[in-house]
Image 1: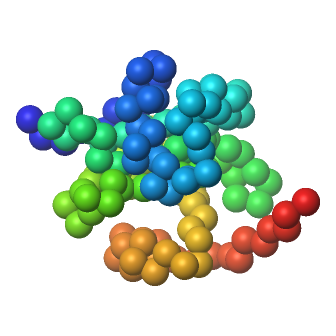
Image 2: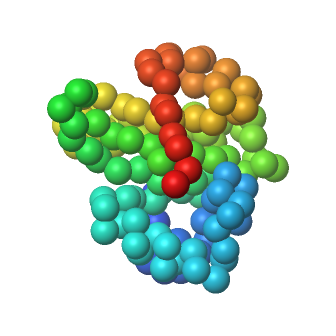
Length: 141
């Protein structure tokens, strides 16, 4: 059976993504993970995973948004491939699915932010035709 991307909706499906998501978001606790996903879903958050041989290999959290500066777009909050499953095209499969989802939803653009320290990830994004289009500034309050 070939790897497939599917949206993770049920609590059981969400739980199955934790071991991959926590590699990107180590501050998340497994005990409150499902509740946290439920909370961000109220803001339009959706969760998808690449599943291969019954195992979650890659996870993406995303939302469809509409802003004055860029119009309707798909924004990726989280995108991570399991550390032991990298360089096996799972990230590309997910990225292609996300771009397809953006097109299916009438989006004009595709956006994501990536931490400045993630050099290997940036090489992947550049290879996939993405460009750095802005700086993202933040301040802890």
